[in-house]
Length: 373
Ligand SMILES: [Zn+2]
Ligand SMILES: [Zn+2]
Ligand SMILES: [Zn+2]
Ligand SMILES: [Zn+2]
Ligand SMILES: [Zn+2]
Ligand SMILES: [Zn+2]
Ligand SMILES: [Zn+2]
Image (cartoon, rainbow, N blue to C red; front, side, top):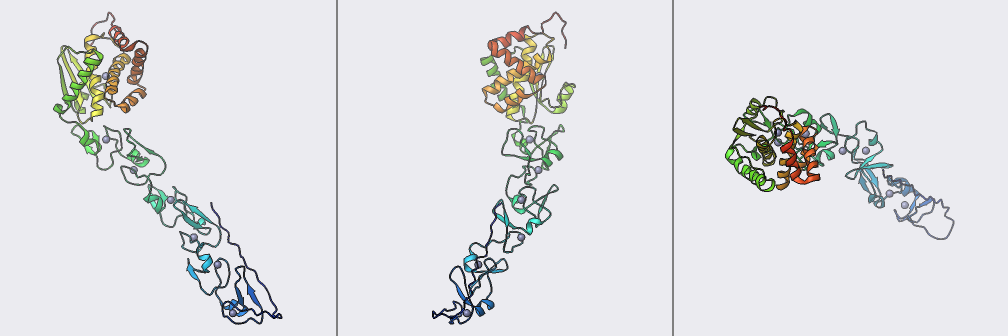
């Protein structure tokens, strides 16, 4: 709060004109014979001119010339420092408060009942943002929600590590979340054939044809072969499928499964959800191919933490190779068997290198047990 005080600088000199020096009124130019006024600036005015002249609203000095500010007359000296209230438009005579954007508000207006939730300025008119009153300035400037375009008041969320898109809590609550990137879809959502709802931004980034995904598979297989020494001997059939098909093949799979390895005897299949972006495909493909490798090289009664942990580790290594660090971070943070398993494998790798991970996997779960499907 910045306050300005205007002090009345009025020096009144009552004079009895008995002396010889002639005094002239600066307003009417007449020689003064009776009482007169002298002000700090040296301005000398006869009693009659004083009484008939308008007075400055700020310093009270009589004026011959004046300017009108906020409905009040001020002298030329005061004109430069005169402040007008941004809300009522009147000249501010006493204290005032300055809000962001250099908006000045007089003490009268400070008593208005409603304040902007963002900057605190008392409100004259306002915008209603989901029940919160916001001043015009705050409504215009500042970050807007990517989905609804309304200003973000306080908290917001981001998805998919994209700092350029911020989402207000209202949209986070009311809208369906995109099944690819996780962001609220807003009103322009896209419904895929399998019932998934995705956002309009993810639609063009997704892959919907197997032939477009196969080159990624080659990249993954090359990495797994050359960098990790993993080769799957069986012929693997790759399929791009909808969520309905994934559920059909794996009824107990999680809601967010986006890939699946299916083995029926010597029939190896890798199913990948269509509509995923490159980043998701780069995460899912190595994971499912790793399961195919496990089917050839590991015991049949692997615990979930080892089964999924190793597949995640292969995926993690590939994401490192293609520099998708953000996906790696998300994988590391998971608290389910995927995250715990991944951390377990990374721990084994830290102590004995990748060889230790492979030797752990090829011996783990190799009990005397029967083949389980
Ligand atoms: Zn005069
Ligand atoms: Zn003045
Ligand atoms: Zn005011
Ligand atoms: Zn405001
Ligand atoms: Zn919003
Ligand atoms: Zn999306
Ligand atoms: Zn898996």
